[in-house]
Image 1 (cartoon, helix red, strand yellow):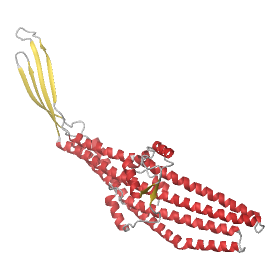
Image 2 (image 1 turned 135 degrees about the vertical axis):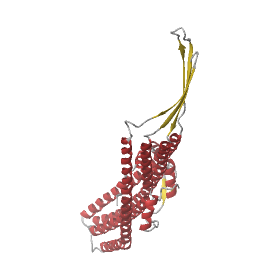
Image 3 (image 1 turned 30 degrees about the horizontal axis):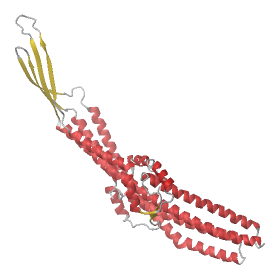
Image 4 (image 1 turned 120 degrees about the vertical axis):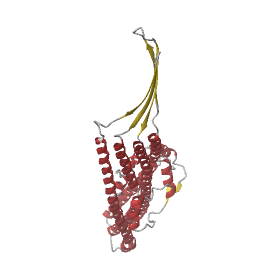
Amino acid sequence: MKTSSEWVGWAFKPWAKLLVASALWGAASLAHAQATGANEPITRLTMDDLVSTVITHNPGLLSARQARTTASAAVRSAGALPNPRLDYMDGSNAARVPAGLAGRVQGVGISQFIESSTLRQARVAGAQASETGAVHLIAATRNELVAQVQLRAYEVLLRRAETQAATEALALLEQVRERVRLRVESGEAARYEIIKADAEIISARQRLQNASLQAEQTMLWLNRLAAGRLPARWQLDAALNVVPTLPGLAQLQAQALTDNPELKLLQAEVSRAQAQLASARASRWPGLELRYQQNQEPDIVHSTLGVSVQVPLFDGREGPQAEAASELERQRARLTGRQAELQQQVLQAWRALEMARLKVEALSQGAVRESESALRVAEAAYRYGERGILDVLDAQRVLRSVRADLLVASYEWQAARIELEFLAGRYAAPM
Protein backbone atom coordinates (compact mmCIF):
# COMPACT_ATOMS: atom_id res chain seq x y z
CA MET A 1 0.00 0.00 0.00
CA LYS A 2 1.22 3.51 -0.79
CA THR A 3 1.98 5.92 2.01
CA SER A 4 -0.40 8.84 2.48
CA SER A 5 2.01 11.31 0.86
CA GLU A 6 2.52 9.07 -2.19
CA TRP A 7 -1.19 8.35 -2.45
CA VAL A 8 -2.14 12.03 -2.44
CA GLY A 9 0.61 12.88 -4.91
CA TRP A 10 -0.60 10.29 -7.42
CA ALA A 11 -0.05 11.69 -10.92
CA PHE A 12 -0.35 8.79 -13.36
CA LYS A 13 -3.53 10.06 -15.02
CA PRO A 14 -4.43 13.18 -17.03
CA TRP A 15 -7.06 14.28 -14.51
CA ALA A 16 -4.44 14.26 -11.73
CA LYS A 17 -2.78 17.23 -13.46
CA LEU A 18 -6.05 19.12 -13.16
CA LEU A 19 -6.18 18.44 -9.46
CA VAL A 20 -2.58 19.56 -8.93
CA ALA A 21 -3.31 22.82 -10.75
CA SER A 22 -6.43 23.39 -8.66
CA ALA A 23 -4.43 23.24 -5.42
CA LEU A 24 -3.08 26.75 -6.14
CA TRP A 25 -6.41 28.33 -7.06
CA GLY A 26 -7.74 29.29 -3.62
CA ALA A 27 -4.59 30.55 -1.90
CA ALA A 28 -5.47 34.26 -2.04
CA SER A 29 -9.04 33.86 -0.82
CA LEU A 30 -7.89 31.53 1.94
CA ALA A 31 -5.36 34.03 3.22
CA HIS A 32 -8.05 36.71 3.33
CA ALA A 33 -10.39 34.37 5.20
CA GLN A 34 -7.75 33.58 7.79
CA ALA A 35 -7.02 37.26 8.30
CA THR A 36 -10.65 38.30 8.73
CA GLY A 37 -12.28 35.19 10.20
CA ALA A 38 -10.41 34.79 13.49
CA ASN A 39 -13.49 35.81 15.47
CA GLU A 40 -16.03 33.91 13.40
CA PRO A 41 -17.90 30.97 14.98
CA ILE A 42 -16.79 27.45 14.18
CA THR A 43 -18.87 25.82 11.43
CA ARG A 44 -19.47 22.10 11.81
CA LEU A 45 -19.32 20.17 8.55
CA THR A 46 -20.15 16.57 7.82
CA MET A 47 -18.06 14.57 5.40
CA ASP A 48 -20.78 14.94 2.76
CA ASP A 49 -20.83 18.72 3.26
CA LEU A 50 -17.08 18.92 2.82
CA VAL A 51 -17.06 16.75 -0.30
CA SER A 52 -19.99 18.64 -1.82
CA THR A 53 -18.29 22.01 -1.31
CA VAL A 54 -15.07 20.83 -2.93
CA ILE A 55 -16.86 19.22 -5.89
CA THR A 56 -18.91 22.35 -6.51
CA HIS A 57 -15.98 24.76 -6.58
CA ASN A 58 -12.92 22.74 -7.54
CA PRO A 59 -11.30 24.36 -10.62
CA GLY A 60 -9.93 21.08 -11.94
CA LEU A 61 -13.35 19.45 -11.97
CA LEU A 62 -14.91 22.55 -13.52
CA SER A 63 -12.25 22.43 -16.24
CA ALA A 64 -13.02 18.76 -16.92
CA ARG A 65 -16.71 19.59 -17.25
CA GLN A 66 -15.91 22.34 -19.73
CA ALA A 67 -13.82 19.86 -21.73
CA ARG A 68 -16.95 17.80 -22.24
CA THR A 69 -18.72 20.83 -23.72
CA THR A 70 -15.79 21.24 -26.11
CA ALA A 71 -15.96 17.57 -27.08
CA SER A 72 -19.70 17.85 -27.73
CA ALA A 73 -19.07 20.75 -30.08
CA ALA A 74 -16.41 18.67 -31.85
CA VAL A 75 -19.05 16.01 -32.57
CA ARG A 76 -21.21 18.59 -34.31
CA SER A 77 -18.17 19.81 -36.27
CA ALA A 78 -17.33 16.26 -37.37
CA GLY A 79 -20.86 15.65 -38.65
CA ALA A 80 -21.15 18.92 -40.57
CA LEU A 81 -21.61 18.63 -44.35
CA PRO A 82 -19.18 20.48 -46.65
CA ASN A 83 -20.50 23.75 -48.07
CA PRO A 84 -20.94 24.26 -51.84
CA ARG A 85 -18.57 26.59 -53.67
CA LEU A 86 -19.78 29.31 -56.05
CA ASP A 87 -17.52 30.80 -58.74
CA TYR A 88 -18.16 33.92 -60.79
CA MET A 89 -16.01 35.34 -63.60
CA ASP A 90 -16.44 38.53 -65.61
CA GLY A 91 -14.38 39.94 -68.48
CA SER A 92 -14.42 41.04 -72.11
CA ASN A 93 -13.85 39.48 -75.49
CA ALA A 94 -11.83 41.33 -78.14
CA ALA A 95 -12.29 40.35 -81.79
CA ARG A 96 -9.00 39.58 -83.61
CA VAL A 97 -10.57 38.43 -86.91
CA PRO A 98 -13.34 40.07 -88.95
CA ALA A 99 -15.77 37.28 -88.16
CA GLY A 100 -15.25 37.54 -84.46
CA LEU A 101 -17.60 39.42 -82.13
CA ALA A 102 -16.34 41.61 -79.34
CA GLY A 103 -18.27 41.95 -76.12
CA ARG A 104 -18.66 40.99 -72.53
CA VAL A 105 -17.79 37.52 -71.24
CA GLN A 106 -19.28 36.07 -68.04
CA GLY A 107 -18.90 32.77 -66.25
CA VAL A 108 -20.79 31.21 -63.36
CA GLY A 109 -19.89 27.92 -61.70
CA ILE A 110 -20.98 25.90 -58.72
CA SER A 111 -19.32 22.86 -57.19
CA GLN A 112 -20.21 20.53 -54.36
CA PHE A 113 -17.91 18.02 -52.68
CA ILE A 114 -19.71 14.80 -51.81
CA GLU A 115 -17.75 13.17 -49.05
CA SER A 116 -17.47 9.43 -48.66
CA SER A 117 -20.03 8.24 -46.14
CA THR A 118 -17.50 5.78 -44.69
CA LEU A 119 -14.98 8.56 -44.07
CA ARG A 120 -17.58 10.83 -42.53
CA GLN A 121 -18.93 8.09 -40.27
CA ALA A 122 -15.41 7.25 -39.07
CA ARG A 123 -14.73 10.90 -38.28
CA VAL A 124 -17.98 11.23 -36.36
CA ALA A 125 -17.26 8.00 -34.48
CA GLY A 126 -13.87 9.37 -33.44
CA ALA A 127 -15.43 12.59 -32.19
CA GLN A 128 -18.09 10.65 -30.29
CA ALA A 129 -15.40 8.50 -28.68
CA SER A 130 -13.62 11.68 -27.60
CA GLU A 131 -16.87 12.97 -26.10
CA THR A 132 -17.33 9.68 -24.25
CA GLY A 133 -13.77 9.99 -23.00
CA ALA A 134 -14.52 13.50 -21.75
CA VAL A 135 -17.49 12.14 -19.80
CA HIS A 136 -15.29 9.47 -18.22
CA LEU A 137 -12.63 12.10 -17.54
CA ILE A 138 -15.16 13.99 -15.43
CA ALA A 139 -15.98 10.81 -13.53
CA ALA A 140 -12.30 9.98 -13.05
CA THR A 141 -11.55 13.50 -11.84
CA ARG A 142 -14.47 13.33 -9.40
CA ASN A 143 -13.40 9.88 -8.22
CA GLU A 144 -9.84 11.08 -7.57
CA LEU A 145 -11.01 14.31 -5.99
CA VAL A 146 -13.43 12.72 -3.53
CA ALA A 147 -10.80 10.18 -2.51
CA GLN A 148 -8.29 12.96 -1.85
CA VAL A 149 -10.80 14.99 0.12
CA GLN A 150 -11.75 12.04 2.30
CA LEU A 151 -8.13 11.07 2.86
CA ARG A 152 -7.19 14.62 3.84
CA ALA A 153 -10.27 14.94 6.02
CA TYR A 154 -9.31 11.86 8.01
CA GLU A 155 -5.79 13.22 8.22
CA VAL A 156 -7.28 16.32 9.85
CA LEU A 157 -9.00 14.06 12.37
CA LEU A 158 -5.69 12.26 12.95
CA ARG A 159 -3.79 15.49 13.55
CA ARG A 160 -6.55 16.82 15.81
CA ALA A 161 -6.46 13.61 17.84
CA GLU A 162 -2.67 13.86 18.07
CA THR A 163 -3.05 17.46 19.20
CA GLN A 164 -5.53 16.44 21.88
CA ALA A 165 -3.26 13.61 23.04
CA ALA A 166 -0.28 15.94 23.12
CA THR A 167 -2.27 18.47 25.16
CA GLU A 168 -3.29 15.86 27.69
CA ALA A 169 0.26 14.51 27.86
CA LEU A 170 1.63 18.00 28.44
CA ALA A 171 -0.82 18.64 31.26
CA LEU A 172 0.08 15.32 32.87
CA LEU A 173 3.81 16.01 32.56
CA GLU A 174 3.37 19.41 34.17
CA GLN A 175 1.63 17.76 37.12
CA VAL A 176 4.45 15.24 37.40
CA ARG A 177 7.03 18.01 37.24
CA GLU A 178 5.32 19.86 40.06
CA ARG A 179 5.46 16.78 42.24
CA VAL A 180 9.09 16.24 41.30
CA ARG A 181 9.90 19.85 42.13
CA LEU A 182 8.44 19.49 45.59
CA ARG A 183 10.41 16.31 46.22
CA VAL A 184 13.61 17.84 44.93
CA GLU A 185 13.18 20.94 47.08
CA SER A 186 12.52 18.77 50.12
CA GLY A 187 15.57 16.66 49.38
CA GLU A 188 13.66 13.44 48.72
CA ALA A 189 14.76 13.24 45.07
CA ALA A 190 17.90 14.04 43.12
CA ARG A 191 18.29 17.18 41.03
CA TYR A 192 18.50 15.26 37.75
CA GLU A 193 14.87 14.19 38.12
CA ILE A 194 13.61 17.76 37.70
CA ILE A 195 15.93 18.16 34.71
CA LYS A 196 14.48 15.01 33.14
CA ALA A 197 10.93 16.23 33.78
CA ASP A 198 11.73 19.60 32.16
CA ALA A 199 13.16 17.83 29.10
CA GLU A 200 10.01 15.74 28.77
CA ILE A 201 7.85 18.88 28.95
CA ILE A 202 9.89 20.57 26.22
CA SER A 203 9.49 17.50 24.00
CA ALA A 204 5.74 17.36 24.69
CA ARG A 205 5.34 21.01 23.71
CA GLN A 206 7.14 20.37 20.45
CA ARG A 207 4.85 17.43 19.68
CA LEU A 208 1.82 19.58 20.44
CA GLN A 209 3.03 22.35 18.16
CA ASN A 210 3.89 19.95 15.33
CA ALA A 211 0.50 18.21 15.48
CA SER A 212 -1.33 21.54 15.49
CA LEU A 213 0.66 22.87 12.53
CA GLN A 214 0.13 19.65 10.55
CA ALA A 215 -3.62 19.91 11.14
CA GLU A 216 -3.63 23.49 9.87
CA GLN A 217 -1.62 22.52 6.79
CA THR A 218 -4.04 19.73 5.96
CA MET A 219 -7.01 22.08 6.34
CA LEU A 220 -5.20 24.54 4.08
CA TRP A 221 -4.87 21.83 1.41
CA LEU A 222 -8.58 21.05 1.64
CA ASN A 223 -9.48 24.71 1.29
CA ARG A 224 -7.27 24.97 -1.78
CA LEU A 225 -9.12 22.06 -3.36
CA ALA A 226 -12.35 23.94 -2.63
CA ALA A 227 -10.94 27.13 -4.22
CA GLY A 228 -11.04 28.88 -0.84
CA ARG A 229 -14.79 28.36 -0.37
CA LEU A 230 -14.64 26.56 2.98
CA PRO A 231 -15.55 28.54 6.12
CA ALA A 232 -12.76 30.40 7.85
CA ARG A 233 -13.18 28.17 10.90
CA TRP A 234 -14.72 24.75 10.58
CA GLN A 235 -14.74 21.41 12.32
CA LEU A 236 -15.43 18.00 10.83
CA ASP A 237 -18.18 15.84 12.29
CA ALA A 238 -16.66 12.41 11.76
CA ALA A 239 -14.83 9.75 13.74
CA LEU A 240 -11.44 8.33 12.87
CA ASN A 241 -12.20 4.92 14.35
CA VAL A 242 -15.54 4.39 12.55
CA VAL A 243 -14.87 2.52 9.30
CA PRO A 244 -17.82 1.80 6.97
CA THR A 245 -18.40 -1.79 5.94
CA LEU A 246 -17.09 -2.79 2.52
CA PRO A 247 -18.18 -5.58 0.18
CA GLY A 248 -16.03 -8.67 -0.22
CA LEU A 249 -12.80 -8.81 -2.20
CA ALA A 250 -14.36 -10.58 -5.21
CA GLN A 251 -17.13 -8.00 -5.45
CA LEU A 252 -14.68 -5.11 -5.22
CA GLN A 253 -12.52 -6.61 -7.96
CA ALA A 254 -15.58 -7.02 -10.17
CA GLN A 255 -16.64 -3.43 -9.50
CA ALA A 256 -13.16 -2.22 -10.37
CA LEU A 257 -13.35 -3.87 -13.80
CA THR A 258 -16.82 -2.52 -14.56
CA ASP A 259 -17.03 0.84 -12.76
CA ASN A 260 -13.49 2.20 -12.58
CA PRO A 261 -13.58 5.42 -14.65
CA GLU A 262 -9.94 5.09 -15.66
CA LEU A 263 -10.69 1.82 -17.43
CA LYS A 264 -13.70 3.41 -19.11
CA LEU A 265 -11.48 6.27 -20.25
CA LEU A 266 -9.00 3.79 -21.73
CA GLN A 267 -11.86 1.95 -23.45
CA ALA A 268 -12.92 5.25 -25.00
CA GLU A 269 -9.35 5.73 -26.23
CA VAL A 270 -9.50 2.30 -27.86
CA SER A 271 -12.75 3.26 -29.60
CA ARG A 272 -11.21 6.51 -30.79
CA ALA A 273 -8.17 4.65 -32.15
CA GLN A 274 -10.47 2.26 -34.02
CA ALA A 275 -12.29 5.21 -35.56
CA GLN A 276 -8.96 6.75 -36.59
CA LEU A 277 -7.96 3.52 -38.31
CA ALA A 278 -11.28 3.40 -40.17
CA SER A 279 -10.83 7.03 -41.16
CA ALA A 280 -7.31 6.38 -42.47
CA ARG A 281 -8.57 3.48 -44.60
CA ALA A 282 -11.51 5.47 -45.94
CA SER A 283 -9.30 8.45 -46.79
CA ARG A 284 -7.95 6.58 -49.84
CA TRP A 285 -11.23 7.50 -51.55
CA PRO A 286 -12.35 10.67 -49.76
CA GLY A 287 -15.23 11.34 -52.15
CA LEU A 288 -16.02 13.13 -55.38
CA GLU A 289 -16.69 16.69 -56.44
CA LEU A 290 -19.53 17.65 -58.78
CA ARG A 291 -19.11 20.83 -60.84
CA TYR A 292 -21.42 22.78 -63.10
CA GLN A 293 -20.14 25.78 -65.05
CA GLN A 294 -21.69 28.12 -67.60
CA ASN A 295 -19.69 30.61 -69.69
CA GLN A 296 -21.52 33.23 -71.76
CA GLU A 297 -19.76 34.87 -74.70
CA PRO A 298 -21.23 37.45 -77.08
CA ASP A 299 -22.33 34.81 -79.57
CA ILE A 300 -22.31 31.52 -77.68
CA VAL A 301 -23.08 29.99 -74.30
CA HIS A 302 -21.00 27.08 -72.90
CA SER A 303 -22.51 24.78 -70.24
CA THR A 304 -20.44 22.00 -68.73
CA LEU A 305 -21.06 19.37 -66.04
CA GLY A 306 -18.12 17.50 -64.58
CA VAL A 307 -16.99 15.25 -61.77
CA SER A 308 -13.62 15.14 -60.02
CA VAL A 309 -12.26 12.12 -58.16
CA GLN A 310 -8.95 11.81 -56.32
CA VAL A 311 -7.20 8.63 -57.49
CA PRO A 312 -4.81 7.01 -54.93
CA LEU A 313 -2.12 6.40 -57.52
CA PHE A 314 1.00 7.63 -55.69
CA ASP A 315 -0.25 7.81 -52.10
CA GLY A 316 -2.35 4.85 -51.00
CA ARG A 317 -2.48 6.20 -47.42
CA GLU A 318 -0.39 3.28 -46.18
CA GLY A 319 1.46 5.52 -43.74
CA PRO A 320 -1.60 6.92 -41.92
CA GLN A 321 -3.12 3.43 -41.82
CA ALA A 322 0.02 1.98 -40.25
CA GLU A 323 0.13 4.78 -37.71
CA ALA A 324 -3.52 4.31 -36.78
CA ALA A 325 -3.11 0.53 -36.52
CA SER A 326 -0.09 0.93 -34.26
CA GLU A 327 -1.94 3.42 -32.05
CA LEU A 328 -4.86 1.03 -31.78
CA GLU A 329 -2.59 -1.78 -30.60
CA ARG A 330 -0.94 0.57 -28.11
CA GLN A 331 -4.28 1.60 -26.62
CA ARG A 332 -5.40 -2.01 -26.40
CA ALA A 333 -2.19 -2.93 -24.60
CA ARG A 334 -2.70 -0.06 -22.16
CA LEU A 335 -6.23 -1.20 -21.42
CA THR A 336 -5.25 -4.85 -20.93
CA GLY A 337 -2.28 -3.96 -18.76
CA ARG A 338 -4.27 -1.55 -16.62
CA GLN A 339 -6.98 -4.15 -16.05
CA ALA A 340 -4.43 -6.64 -14.73
CA GLU A 341 -2.69 -3.96 -12.68
CA LEU A 342 -5.97 -2.79 -11.20
CA GLN A 343 -6.78 -6.27 -9.95
CA GLN A 344 -3.44 -6.40 -8.16
CA GLN A 345 -3.97 -2.96 -6.68
CA VAL A 346 -7.34 -3.99 -5.29
CA LEU A 347 -5.79 -7.11 -3.78
CA GLN A 348 -2.92 -5.09 -2.29
CA ALA A 349 -5.28 -2.50 -0.81
CA TRP A 350 -7.47 -5.27 0.62
CA ARG A 351 -4.49 -6.82 2.37
CA ALA A 352 -3.46 -3.41 3.70
CA LEU A 353 -7.01 -2.99 5.00
CA GLU A 354 -6.84 -6.31 6.82
CA MET A 355 -3.42 -5.51 8.27
CA ALA A 356 -4.59 -2.14 9.55
CA ARG A 357 -7.74 -3.67 11.02
CA LEU A 358 -5.77 -6.36 12.86
CA LYS A 359 -3.32 -3.76 14.09
CA VAL A 360 -6.13 -1.59 15.45
CA GLU A 361 -7.69 -4.55 17.22
CA ALA A 362 -4.37 -5.64 18.73
CA LEU A 363 -3.47 -2.17 19.97
CA SER A 364 -6.91 -1.27 21.32
CA GLN A 365 -7.55 -4.60 23.04
CA GLY A 366 -4.07 -5.40 24.32
CA ALA A 367 -1.22 -2.92 24.11
CA VAL A 368 -3.14 0.16 25.26
CA ARG A 369 -4.61 -1.60 28.30
CA GLU A 370 -1.27 -3.09 29.28
CA SER A 371 0.47 0.27 28.94
CA GLU A 372 -2.18 1.95 31.08
CA SER A 373 -1.76 -0.73 33.73
CA ALA A 374 2.02 -0.34 33.64
CA LEU A 375 1.69 3.41 34.11
CA ARG A 376 -0.60 2.99 37.11
CA VAL A 377 1.87 0.59 38.71
CA ALA A 378 4.79 2.95 38.06
CA GLU A 379 2.90 5.92 39.53
CA ALA A 380 1.92 3.95 42.64
CA ALA A 381 5.49 2.74 43.13
CA TYR A 382 6.76 6.31 42.72
CA ARG A 383 4.37 7.61 45.36
CA TYR A 384 5.65 5.02 47.83
CA GLY A 385 9.26 5.71 46.93
CA GLU A 386 9.88 2.30 45.36
CA ARG A 387 10.69 3.71 41.90
CA GLY A 388 12.08 6.93 40.55
CA ILE A 389 10.54 9.49 38.27
CA LEU A 390 12.35 7.99 35.29
CA ASP A 391 10.22 4.85 35.54
CA VAL A 392 7.05 6.96 35.55
CA LEU A 393 8.22 9.02 32.57
CA ASP A 394 9.17 5.86 30.68
CA ALA A 395 5.75 4.34 31.34
CA GLN A 396 4.06 7.54 30.16
CA ARG A 397 6.22 7.56 27.04
CA VAL A 398 5.28 3.96 26.25
CA LEU A 399 1.59 4.73 26.68
CA ARG A 400 1.84 7.80 24.44
CA SER A 401 3.64 5.76 21.81
CA VAL A 402 1.04 3.00 21.87
CA ARG A 403 -1.83 5.48 21.64
CA ALA A 404 -0.07 7.27 18.77
CA ASP A 405 0.35 3.93 16.99
CA LEU A 406 -3.36 3.26 17.48
CA LEU A 407 -4.27 6.61 15.91
CA VAL A 408 -1.97 5.97 12.95
CA ALA A 409 -3.35 2.45 12.51
CA SER A 410 -6.91 3.83 12.51
CA TYR A 411 -5.90 6.35 9.86
CA GLU A 412 -4.24 3.61 7.76
CA TRP A 413 -7.45 1.59 8.04
CA GLN A 414 -9.43 4.53 6.68
CA ALA A 415 -6.81 5.16 3.97
CA ALA A 416 -6.97 1.55 2.79
CA ARG A 417 -10.76 1.66 2.76
CA ILE A 418 -10.71 4.90 0.74
CA GLU A 419 -8.24 3.43 -1.75
CA LEU A 420 -10.42 0.36 -2.23
CA GLU A 421 -13.48 2.49 -2.91
CA PHE A 422 -11.43 4.69 -5.23
CA LEU A 423 -10.18 1.71 -7.22
CA ALA A 424 -13.73 0.34 -7.43
CA GLY A 425 -14.92 3.69 -8.82
CA ARG A 426 -17.43 4.23 -6.03
CA TYR A 427 -16.77 7.98 -5.97
CA ALA A 428 -17.23 8.50 -9.70
CA ALA A 429 -21.02 8.87 -9.66
CA PRO A 430 -22.41 12.38 -9.10
CA MET A 431 -23.43 13.13 -5.55
